[in-house]
Amino acid sequence: MKRGLITTILTITCLAMVFGGIQVSAQENTEVNQNVLNINGKFISQGQFQRELTNELNKEAGKSLTEDDLKAKVQKVLDNIIRNELLYQECEKINIVVPEDEINEKLDAEKSKFSTPEEYQDSLKNANKDEEIRKSEIKRNLAIKHLINEKFQPSVTDKEISAYYKDNKDTYKDVTLEEARDEIERKLKLQKLADSYNQFYTELKSKAKVEVLMK
Image 1 (cartoon, rainbow, N blue to C red):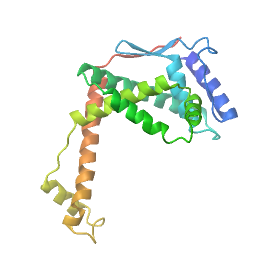
Image 2: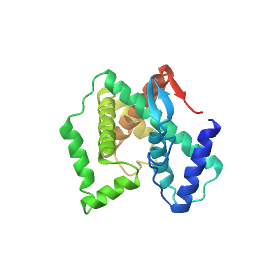
Image 3: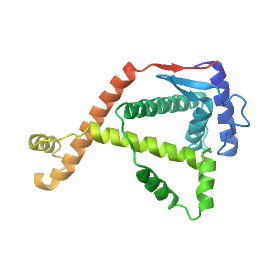
Image 4: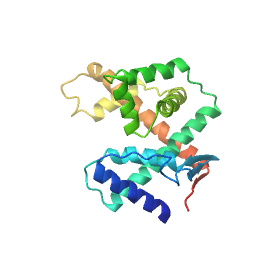
């Protein structure tokens, strides 16, 4: 990671620590249009990166973070951006389309959690977003959810359920196999889903061209 980015990160972090939450304005940052990542030809701007980093740092508002902590946060944000972009590119490749009604339903559900429209707008402002950005995020997240649901449909056999039950007798010592069946099936499906997803993403990333672009 190059020094220019480190300086920017430390500046943002110092502000976050002082104010317990920050907003980065594109108009106020002359370097905001520089690109941070190139992911298979899709450029990620410094503005987007800073927005994601700010949100991550705001989760730790008031806490004392070391330089190693900050570097770990930066890496986490970079990894998240790369993962989401690669998965969304895969959605586009196989033509996953999210209906507008589904996007609006999700957006309306989020808005309903706030007492007033103004409170909702304030929450977007605090996250350095507007409704258009949030709607785009929802669209991408739903597309990725559809991708995972379509691509990974793990099944579990009775033999696997019985084996898990026997191997975890201490957990189910007062529960019969039939009583524990549904819970075990859910656990095994989630485990298989996680394994399949991790393998899929590892292969996807290994084929991707990802560049970190810093001056």
